[in-house]
Length: 115
Length: 112
Image (cartoon, rainbow over all chains, first blue to last red):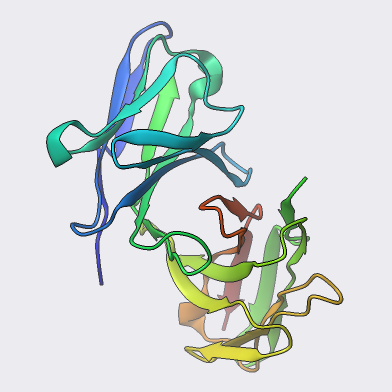
């Protein structure tokens, strides 16, 4: 089936540094998402993105977070600066349809450890 | 607010026996859809089942679920668990506004 690729699969960085998580969504998909999952907890919505813009973001999407998809390349999540509580697995997802029929296709996640 | 609750974090069942994973929800949206996602070890979550029709049974790969709006539930069931069913299962609510709410997930282990 359709694949979403995430790079890197693991990243360890020091608190205060910048990190960029990359997502290569399904090629004809139009809607992109980031979810955050802290170990032992549920996946929580961070942000969705369509047509070059953030459509909706949650309270977890702090000012230090940003997303973009320059020129149809990777959909990226940037955290600058990072904090200890940013340690989690970040899942990227994409979908073709809007509202009710949209099935999410997930990547395998990027595990971020902030020391 | 909108939320999805999966009461069991861990479920262990013997191969060949039935299994049920619970999912209840709370939402103010009227037009909703539900998904069960399954995540095998070191793989991405993928859709197992989906439904938006009240009281209609949905089946796939031996699993079935029925959306019951009267009880706000979308439990996942299988009559005979297989070793290959061991995985992490997420119940998810699609409010129709491109915001999906996930439960905490239930880790299912099937033992011989």
